[in-house]
Image (tube, rainbow, N blue to C red; front, side, top):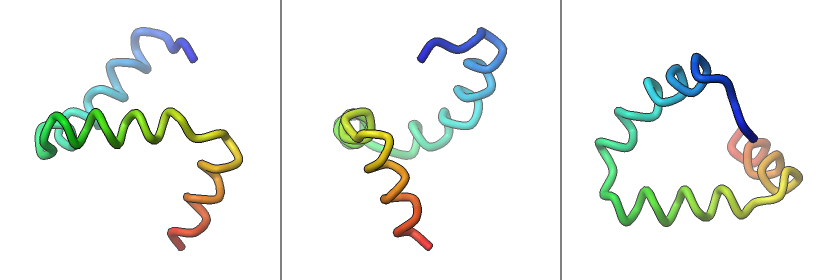
Length: 50
């Protein structure tokens, strides 16, 4: 989903430390897996973390 430049910069500011602390191949693999989730699957995963 497209976001405005201000929001994209804020998201990047929070993601940059996590990305820097993770090997690129791990980041790419996990990022791809997350993008492949349906909204229902993502919600179920979040709820299972509690």
